[in-house]
Image 1 (tube, rainbow, N blue to C red):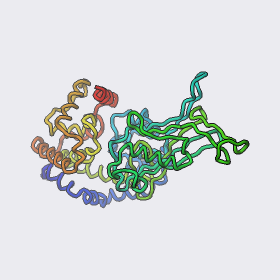
Image 2: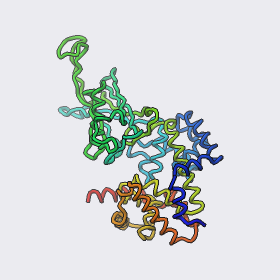
Image 3: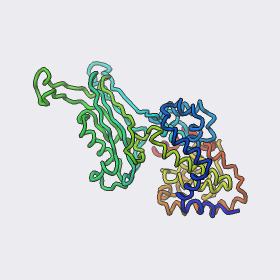
Image 4: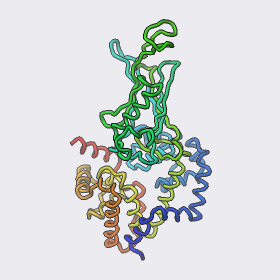
Length: 417
């Protein structure tokens, strides 16, 4: 039998070719063709759940094949979406559900309304929206990446104005220092520039919240009337529009990406409809199929491929600790026993610290360093396992990870300490 390291290298040395071979397999090609031909007709949660073939394909694409039977559970994931941090998907420890909710959001958006003054002498509250996640340290917009969404504000009972925000290589050119490393501050500034060039100039502001997330807020303004000049009567009369009050609203909705673009996740504009995500879903399906088939022959190869795919997205040791399969790889390399489901928060925090001292998570974004790490895992796995029959399935079902509340509390306490 070919060892883990050799098998991994054969697949990973030309992953594109490996995926193309998988795509050419008759059963895979048949299911992919059906998905691509029919997903554009899906416009609701009921449509997706009602077509078992489409639904099963989508679930496998996001590594949720073992949960295909749980339609009531998945309906809750889909109906609550991922726009709110309090949504069902975002409360689950397993981020596969959040990814699934985003891909099949069916045009969900977010909205907020201001509030009238609660008592005399207090100002009305503005309408404001903050992204449900913090911006990353940098984003690569040098290629096909794009963030695209519509910002809309109601000024009064009869007037609503909007602007479509598009961040990509063209709109950011000349406005950022490095298109491959666009900072949160540059993103906020670029959004503000597009707002100022639209009908929402002076009516909505955008910026970075104290926690590092992108936010939008309604602002007060003076409508100068038909003549556009201060003073006047009748149609030319000036009107003061308050920044707050129940009449002021904000809404952010998704719009299709520019042709050929791929979605960049800046907290808004990533919940694209399923027809827009068809290619990304088929690629994910091929990746999952490849990894699953490799795991049938050798558990270590599936773990290696999975780690290589997920590692560039990791931000801390807690991300590893919260994923059973990633933890298995880390434990193997470091030489740690598996955690018990009954482990205390203190013990888990210590384990996260140990992982952080042994594994430079940031370095895994470097392809060469990641490849060296995965090869090291494969070599150790070969030395420790004489059979491919290790119990792999539980590692990819979320059953071995830390629950969301515990992981969040650990991350918060470490950040605050």
